[in-house]
Amino acid sequence: MPNIPAEFAYLLNQRGPAMLMEAMKNMDVAEIVGPRHNPVILGWAKEVNAPVGGWFTDDEKPWCGLFMAVCARRAGLEPPPGFDAVRALSWAAWGQPAQSARLGYILVMPRHDARGAVIGGHVTMYVGENQTHYFCLGGNQNNRVSIMPIAKARISSIRRPPYPLADAPNVKAYFVNAASYGAGGSEA
Image 1 (cartoon, rainbow, N blue to C red):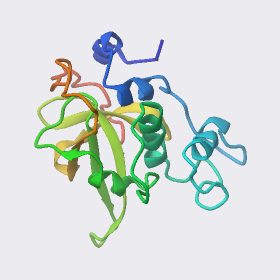
Image 2 (image 1 turned 135 degrees about the vertical axis):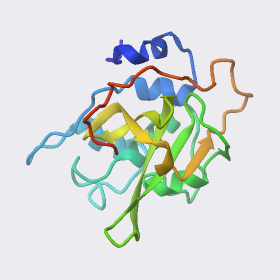
Image 3 (image 1 turned 30 degrees about the horizontal axis):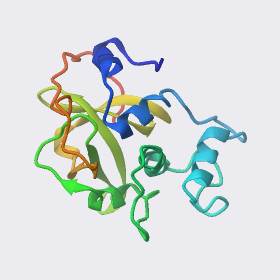
């Protein structure tokens, strides 16, 4: 059983979406600080044919896109040829655009340098929200697979994964009373 915080216990009763179910199986997989590296994370790079030895030489490289690619592959949703699945911002072009977040939808946000230039991004999955934040399950969030709050204003793209069937009844917005969850924690 995945290690899900109490505020998100409703996730344990879900049967889908498939990518979210795959992500939950990996809760708390984490980087290893120092010269050793988590073989699980490095194994994901091999699983999705990412260039191990190129970009993924260790578990301290940004791996949120890699985690999303593994979840998609294990859910039977192969990104199209030429899609750079290990790059977070690539996910803003995958699936279908959505106006609002729903359970298991993909959320993408850019990262900016001090001058405001985009220097990278982050990709994660929606599991709930409150008035100001989305609660997101993703990889490389505080260096682990975890749920964390991300301010709604930071999200630049909401994407519906390309599942072959229409959304199930549980694929909806979940309003979470998690005011203290992540308080004082960092956002992705």
